[in-house]
Picture 1: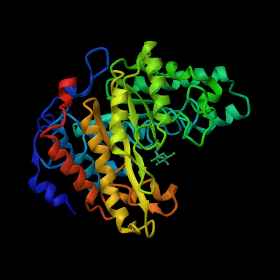
Picture 2: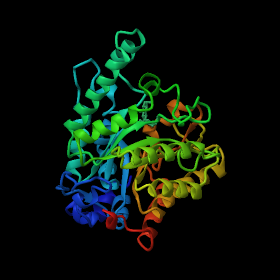
Picture 3: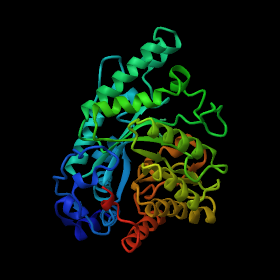
Picture 4: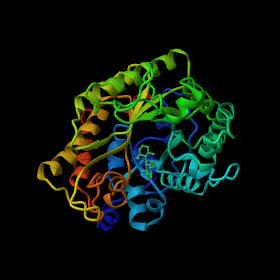
Length: 397
Ligand code: 9MR
């Protein structure tokens, strides 16, 4: 275990000092006014060779998705705090979790994450306000049986966004306002590229995106508001989904809709093609619209022997996994507007992958026994080298 090493070489100092930057200075970009974010008040033990400390040298935030166990299990919590400078609640801010019964809220998980982040000098990516998945049963049932009309659905979404964003006003750096509403090659696309069968598009039409961003902005004018999706930078052979998202957000910007960033999730699989060069070009394409960009859910899965041990079944795949992680980070590093690089969790044992993709796993940067993998060292080395040439994000704020 690397904990003893962390403790030995780590220096206990104010996190802002470790990061070489104030939290407030990191916090904004396209946001119209001065940011209001919690000061990095804690004394976290951050090793100088940790991912977060190395990335701080160029003003990049390194993140992880954190469910409750990554905040409370001591070994996991030490990594969550020691390696990362921004946290995303893996599930705890989703509508199903925060309002399981209509009008009855449970903010426990979300509050705990925000508290943990504050204590450890970390920012928070809020995730996610409008998504077809993990909606409360009372909502989907009501829509299905007609007791909730489309007009009522719109008003409920407005209320949901306002309630949640207001609750955490000033405490969220980036919000994933809308998630996964564009069509993939296997979906039915509308002429504007949105998924015709997406729950929100089906019931409320394409205009709901602009509404959602406006409602979120009204509740917290200083949070960076993002559109978040997968296969929108480098993974899609035709690049059609990228083009659709690009053109749609360009239109939103032209209409004055308060959108500040695009999040590329970065869920890769070594069996498919992926172009780091294309990812960089696409991230730059969004950046050229005046948007910030972020890698929001990076992981790279591959075929493994079993879901418990998660040993890759072929040698090239073992090499491809860290290579593709490195390609994603390098693409982000090359684009000055890329402000954060978040990994979806960090250890294979807790990953969502084996439960969803039969026979696959090994998708994170720590193995099932919490040992650092090649992917960790790949990211660490890329960040070390970045200090010698990658554009410094701090000058963009
Ligand atoms: O990692 C999340 C997993 O625990 C949930 O069961 C799942 C439900 O769909 O959502 C996972 O996170 C997703 C994220 O919120 C949006 N992009 C895809 C992620 C992986 O499915």
